[in-house]
Image (cartoon, rainbow, N blue to C red; front, top):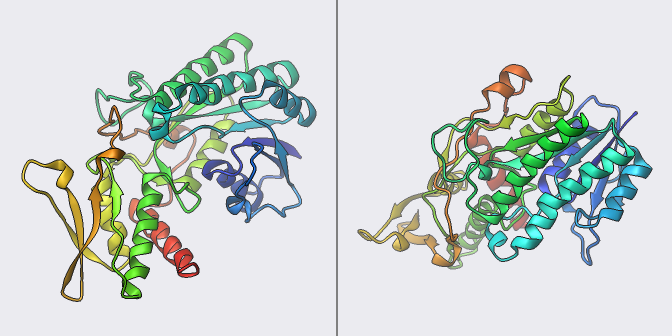
Length: 353
């Protein structure tokens, strides 16, 4: 039985990977899910596999070299999937040193532990489309210049370089996958897509109960992103780890959609029609209103506090090499993703209203 060490097990990607390996694939593996020591850990994302006989929760911290070394030495994993990170772009300006410590030095700690204690272990580093930054062309491929626009994206770009260095210096099986935006029902509530779908669900129930809706507040609603389902991406990651020779790939939907479009579709799947309004020449006046029983209700407004110091206007990936060489392809469309997230949050909110 193969042993897989997965960091970030409480987050979206780590839990999605564990769920795929234990419940949805035909793999015969034992999964060790690494979590940081937290005073109030949230295990909501691990419910689907926490009782699986081949799952074990272990403690470790990407910022702590001793814990990473001990886990790799004791477990002797065949695969090390690193989804642990400080992954919220917006807060990376507030804590840039911590972001680099976890996202970049953390990767070095993993690679060093593998090099010293389990050199045959295959390592996956989670990269980000944010590494592309201020883009030169679209869609972006692996040849696109690395042009980060945030401490977060710079930390991921640095991790990409160090993975290449270890792969070439020590003949390690180490890959850095560039994952474009991927969402789902496990997505953290501070991320824009989940903030939208939770906000829509809240408004849905407020209107049902004849209450005044609470408008969603967002920053740059004109940003374009390449969105996919996280459940599709973990399949691609596993394929990367099981290719004959280590090679980096991009995973993406190969299309981009604006945050405005995400909002419009989210309300549509909740049963509301609406429209965008803006005072001439005033982007901060942008708002989204919905129609309900001959009323026009404010559902979203722009709040400048959610703008970032440096914005990334557009991201769109070229995942054709992964599709052609790994046989990977996304199964969930943009519309299906939005609909799934909205319905999930409406159902969850119903039980807490």
